[in-house]
Length: 46
Ligand SMILES: [Zn+2]
Image 1 (spheres, rainbow, N blue to C red):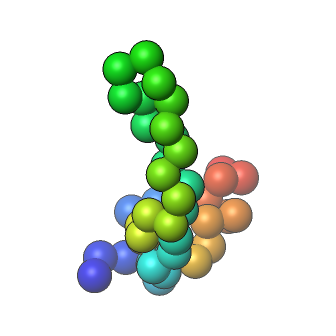
Image 2 (cartoon, rainbow, N blue to C red):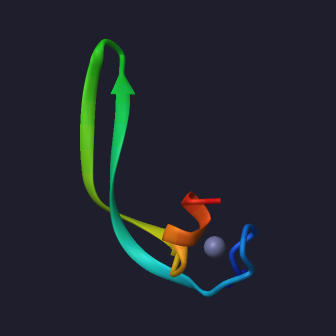
Image 3 (cartoon, helix red, strand yellow):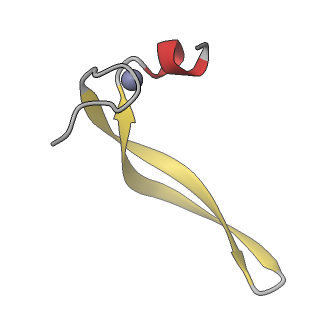
């Protein structure tokens, strides 16, 4: 597992909602596992 590329912090496995466009439809895919920085709030407010 690699540390966060922004703040070098620890990454957490979280379930996300991903919005995908399939043709002309927009589909929301729930519970997609993704690595999220545990300090994501800090990263966003940079
Ligand atoms: Zn980070």
